[in-house]
Every structure is written in C-alpha cells, then in structure tokens.
Length: 114
Length: 113
Image 1 (tube, each protein chain N blue to C red):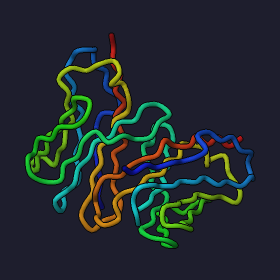
Image 2 (tube, chains in turn purple, orange; image 1 turned 180 degrees about the vertical axis):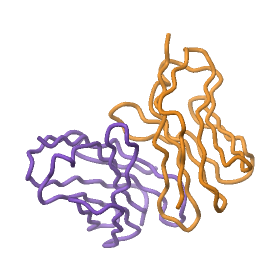
Image 3 (cartoon, rainbow over the protein chains, first blue to last red; image 1 turned 180 degrees about the horizontal axis):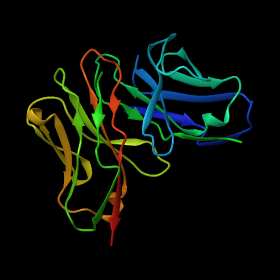
C-alpha cells in the first residue's frame, strides 16, 4: 500500500528565516506530487506540482520554491519567510500513469511565522 | 477555466438528521468528481469518487453522492448525520489530460445535539 509522510507537523519560524518542508511517498513509483496551502477560510491553494524528477510547475508566484530531488521526495522551501507565509501546508500525490484522478494527502504542516 | 462551486460556506445539521452538501462544477469534458473530508488540523481524506458508470456512488462513512450531468452537480448526501461527521468537506473535479484537481472552497459542517 501507499503512504505519504510529511514533516514537521508544526513549525514556528521568525520572519526572514529559511524554510524547508519535506514530503515523501512510499509504495509507488513516479507519482505526481503537489504542495497546497490553506489559509483560514480560503480553501486550498495549489502552490506547486511535479510530474517527474526535476520537473516543477508553479501555480502562484510568491516567496516559495519547490524541488523534487528524488522520485518520491518533494520539498517546499523559502529563503526568507514572510508573515504572509503562515498557513497550513499540505503535500499530496496522485498516480503518475493517469491524469485527473484522485489525490492523496499528507497530514499537513502548520507553519506560523512570527 | 475549470471551477468548482460549493455555495454553502457553513451548514448546521441536527444529529440524526439527513445531510446534503452541494457542489457544482464548470461545464467541460467528462469530469472525474471527488468529495474529501478534513478534520481540524488534519489532511484531506477521500470520501468517494466518480469516474464513470452508475451516477450514484457510495463512499466511506455512510456517504453517497449523485452525479447529475444536466445540472453539472455532484451533491454529497448522508441519511443520518453523527456528531463525528462535523468537519470541512471539499468537492473537487479532475479531467483526463490534466495533472491537477480543482477544489471548491469547502463547506464547514456543524452538527448540533
């Protein structure tokens, strides 16, 4: 079976500090990978997605970047955090062989920038 | 552009009463449709999905949803709500050839005693 791991669960960071959130998927190969952000009352915002190693699509220009150094690893980064980066970050994966199918989510990271 | 509308931001239902959460998607090619549930501080869990075939689909936790092409809708239903169903519910649509899903803004379900 497939599992997705996302860490840390909670993070408090000062403004201007760097960020690295990591997500890994087990039990499948060549998944599509996604980073979403939730702000209170604003639903899910797709930040980045990747259909393969080194292939990153950015949906929203901002202070964040993503990388996929390995097939089942997806990293969300920032060089300098802003207050507005606070939120709930979710990693997800879907089957790479098909498109339009369901996504499976990690448990999320609550990021508070102070 | 693809879009999903969940017209109800909040819904309050008495425990034991029936539930229907509304979802409409923008018209386009044959959609793949999904309902997810999110408890506070948790990730999203897939409740059910529709790809093709029978337009009434059954999911986990006693939920079902009906696809109505003529109305571009995929409403979620449950005959009798339990207090543990209180959560936020998201409808999503996907299309063949697109790697990403489009999500609605969610409906928060409150269950009163």
